[in-house]
Amino acid sequence: MGGSRERAGISLPRVRRGDALRPDDTAAQQGSAGVLHSTAGARAPAWLAGSYLWGVVLLVLLYWGVAKLGYAFGFSGPIAAIVWLPVGVGVAFLTIGGLSFWPGAFVGDLLANQYSSLPVGGAIGQSLGNLAEVVLIAFLMRSIIRRRSPLTTLSGVLGMVAAICTGTALSALVGPLTLAATGPLSFGEFPHVSWTWWLGDTCGALLVLPLALAWSPLAEMRRRLSRRSVIEAVAIVAVVAVLSWVAARGILPAYVIFPILALAAIRFGSRGATTAVFVSIAFVVWGETDRHGHFTVHAFSQSVSETQLFVVVAAVSSLCWTALVAEREEAEQGLRVSNARAFTAAEAERRRMERDLHDGAQQRLLALAIRLGLQQDEATTPALEQFLVETEEQLNEAIDELRNLSHGIHPSVLSELGLANAVRTLAVRSTIPVKLVELPTRMVDPDTQAAAYFIVTEALANAQKHSHASTIRVRVASRLAGLHVVVEDDGVGGASVSAGSGLRGIRERVDAFGGMFAVESPRGIGTRVTAVIPTRAV
Image 1: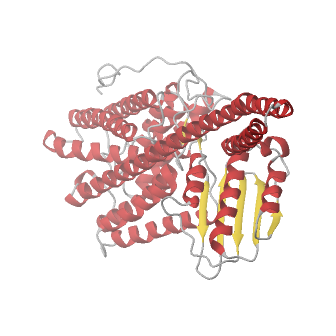
Image 2: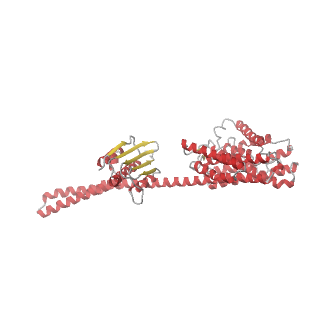
């Protein structure tokens, strides 16, 4: 550090006031994880856009307040800490708000120094090292986020960890060297202090930065949690807290927490993972300080290093689990989109073939049948007349088969009558009485209509062939999530989605739309086929 930015090993980048994340550039999508917007361009978030000075003051208060909290609870000392949370606060603020707010981190660090234990020169040098650390990490993070959110891919998580380790290593070298040069620290203590310093700052950044990115207003949540999911999330956090408290008391080993942390990451993405890790680490660090008292330069022990390594492993592991789940969800989403596009293309081709058959071959055959009918009156012999009659009959049969084929390719009844009336037609033709519980009242896109029609057709056909039912109930309802199709009977049950069955074809059709399909068929009770088909813009 040595009192200047050049001697600290980096130069502060020139930035514009309000250089911040843009709320109009989204990163790649992440399942139940938040998606952070791009940093390309420069515009401050709404909560910082009013005043640059207000942003600096806010960072000073946050940085200073978190530092004082560490001193009060004993996990931070004048030199190094078990977990130095201010570095995470500073990095998160500069990453989200903009590098131009760096004076807030510097002033906050100066105010947080314990001058009763440190000489002024050493304290200022330490603050300059901490400033260089925060700015370097934030600069690297903004470069990563410019491409996509670091919480949604494994490479992003590893890049974030590398950025944090690089910046904290700079502070862990400059800070202890400055303090050794000014007197509070001997050069013999430098290696141990530097190691603890580096781990403490790394722990602080790994705890606060991902938590801030996940819960930032600039992070979009792709889905809202249901009431049941909220209860589940609260239960997971409570279990994490209890297990962490038990581990902190030394009753159980700390690794018993990892399965629950993994569950939080898998079920609730980056927000669940970062929150659960923060709660867990709070209890573990509290247990460490409760056993050994307030952290001081003379309190470096093996248990401190073990606690710090536990923090690092728990945080990085949870972030990796989250990223892997997000990557899998993104891959599944891409596959669903690809399947939907292929299905749409196939449906369009089917409609084209139906039009070509109707307007081309079918019309030619009809014209030929009419000509044969006219030629019957001009037949010169009974044999020729009989030949013309038989040929006309066979031609009419071919026309009927061609008409049925074209209707099977894409049911024209949908275009002529609409989905509701098409389902009524199916009900009238059924050999088992069909009760229409509900039919759609609004128009949906042709592909969704066709999918719903074929689902009802196949489900009715299966029920008539195998169920021995006395009645069938059909519901086709328009909902916000899409078309809900339910076909249930009171037959013998025992239906299954096996290879080659009609129900398997229904499931594949629904899967192509990214919908939901289920079959409930207990023996002796009946069968219930349920499908939810997402609608598309008409």
